[in-house]
Length: 155
Image (cartoon, rainbow, N blue to C red; front, side, top):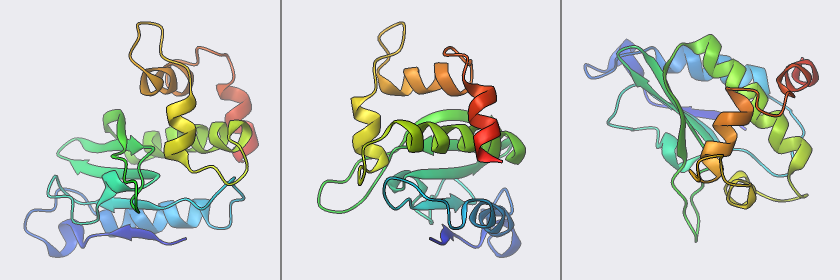
């Protein structure tokens, strides 16, 4: 699927990052990946959120310092807002965390299960912060010791 983007800093006075170039990079990286269900994504060039990144399986919203990475959203008849996985990270870190998130999803979700449904079923984090805390522990802190394996499987 294509990665939706707004026009970003290239054509918009509010844009703080080049969302179009980053969207193309993300699209080319995950093009054709086999996953339990379709995955939609978006890159917004500022907090005005023209690309609706928080309504996608994964989305990036530009900040002055990089991007905020949101995961587990979807639209449709039962919309779910994506949750913030990491804030103010550079493009390479977004890709690293996305690689791990997507591979964790591929390896653990049921067939035809969207990310929002899968994410809700994950265990809560160590301090009771819910599934998003669990994802931060697994993807950023490597609490399960599987990040090297997730990285290898994506390449």
